[in-house]
Length: 199
Image (cartoon, rainbow, N blue to C red; front, side):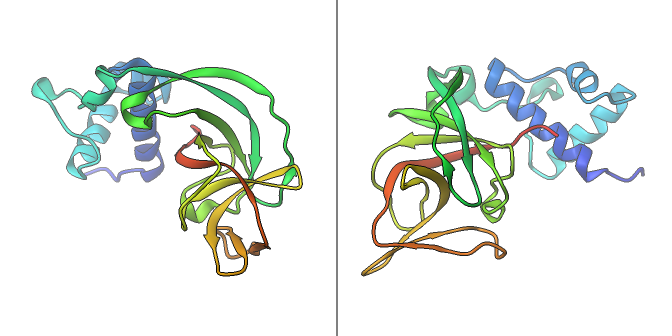
């Protein structure tokens, strides 16, 4: 049996998830072959079967790719993409709407949402990679352990929120970065989900 390329496997899974969110249906095997420049449909079949065997995808009748029913009957919510947020040291916070995207309310929830593009590597331990699109719920409070967009002296950063008795820790999820310790902090929103960029 031919060896599974884990990178290709992940690329196929990410493409299927993104396609479902954007189109409300699953891509065809030929869509996957064309998008990822795979040499044959049999390769797509082999990788889809591997994803199903690992329970990363479910099958339906006719051996099609399962789609979360929340996507097919979802109410779209318009969410603006508002510039970048660093996942390292804070940078000047500039709100620059790059576009507006429709996200399914049944998955991302209600409330005032916005998106930011992640910069840097300080939150990779929380699954946030450089270039990811972050879906944020706008709110000025957070629970301990939430990942928040915080504003410090008109600069913005993404960190884990850890309030203590007499100070607040904004903690990176990468051991090469140091905690930010403050007496107080202004919270702009809480991270709901990180959408990985397609490599």
